[in-house]
Length: 323
Image (cartoon, rainbow, N blue to C red; front, side, top):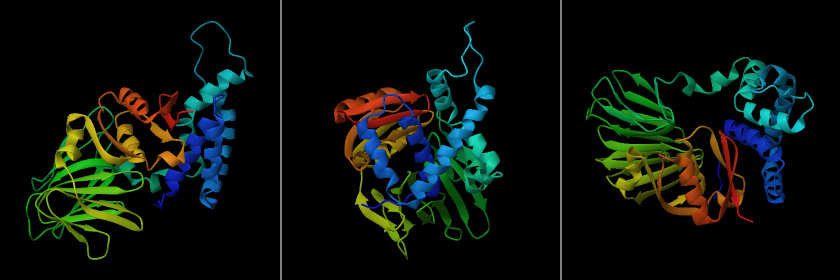
């Protein structure tokens, strides 16, 4: 299966590889996987060069960004071990600031979710009541924008997952734009899950149309579509109770790709979960996980799949094949 990644995702992967490779315990297998990642194309090479430049600029910022010692022991300026940890901790915050300043705010222009009308964090979801009485139940780490007009009720799901209860109105379609999938209905209950490489749309009650492909595909209750750039899968029959498990803090996977499962778990904790072995991304997983304790869920998953888990910072966890 060929996956089409955005430039933003590739840049994020480059920053994550920096943290992995700058760790003293980086394995030969991880180095080989990095080489495979880098060989995928020019976009990866450009993102890697950009990330290395950003890493170098963090050297100059380190004296200002390094926290003051909590004890009386001075920190040596050339203490490589201490500084390596400091830079790794800075990468997700300070590096973003460096890139933002260098690009003149281009991050904000390419990340409209920053200006979302409604968003949730890692601690809890929430329900939004729209102007016509329709409901949007946002999962954790999710964001939407609302655009209302006499012609249409339009929602953009920037990231995360949401359950939509669209009030029936045959004169104003209810439209949800979620990257590679656009859903339209006069009135229905449906779930939209925006993953890193695809969007899943599940009809819970009544009917809706999902595009692409051109002309759209009709989904009825209990059916799901998977849409990614250049490809679609479905409709497939699914267990809607399992799909909505996130409402009770559970992730139920029935043959779910490991990469998609990692994305869902990431919504319950700060930072990201990176799969360093590219061969594992499409590994089908069947499991029921308690997402309220994501780190414990990761350990459970790793034990059943024989994966190696490494915590680099509170913001980055890597999964790789156990040696």
